Image (tube, rainbow over all chains, first blue to last red; front, side):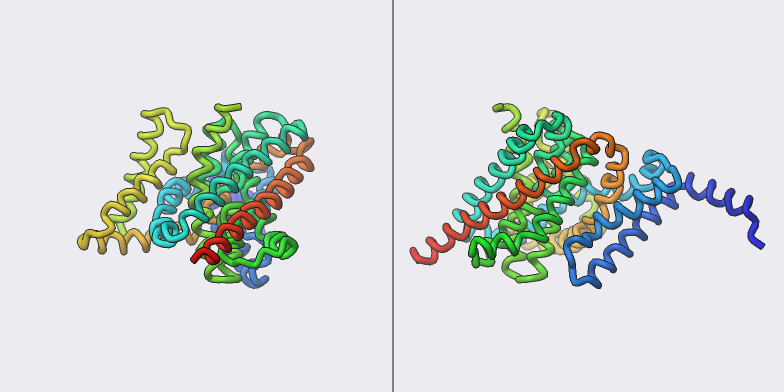
Length: 240
Length: 122
């Protein structure tokens, strides 16, 4: 016999515990990541998007406040800052490559990053999006911890920026190869760099899984565009 | 391990203080990233730096391997902002798709052109 009252009291206890939400977050990620790897890195099964979906569904289903969930999840959230600092290491490791091709990398970096901001801004204005939303969209092509930092400083909504960033990554990783093929761009270094600059970590993982060189250039593109964009976006807003 | 964790946290702290002190519009952790990169490049040739660099490599790899996991708490926060997206969801998706495709094309095109010119010059 299952005692309904007892089950209910266990649930009341659990959902008030940070431990439960922390465990749920990591568990959802592990399941989503397993499915992603089983699917041979199918971009639409992106583990972040999937785990966010799982956790959100549970919160909505059981009518849990986000603040309660975040009480447990904040331990994971805290690591975003240190992870951003740690991005210095992959950039440092690829430093010789950056110096070797500095001209190609710098020009593509500056043009690509500037274009990403301009196109996002003008499309958003054209579609008459509210200001808060535009600010959340502007840093969308860089890695989420940096994008969220920028979003917070310029008056966007960091959590919205996180979702937008993930979507951008998924779109780039899924459609990148198609775009390059249509344009008959065959250089793997250029394709990788563009994927990293446009779709940060998700694009880099994709490039890495297809071609080692493309992966290295993607990592460089992701790191450098993160740096440059955090300077360019506030600068752009000051100018206009 | 503990040393490298201390170094990463310390650089983040310095970055945050830098950002507050000078009122920079760059996120504190990004400032920390730049400062750590500069430090690594400066001590590149020192033999004694080898050990701490190994340690840093390991910690950074662990952190960055689980980078996707770190976005989930904030991603779930979008549940709170669904109302803001409701009327604009289609527009936002359009901006993302168009913006991403055009940026992908431009960046790869520019870089391939420059790299091709470089191989011809060499």
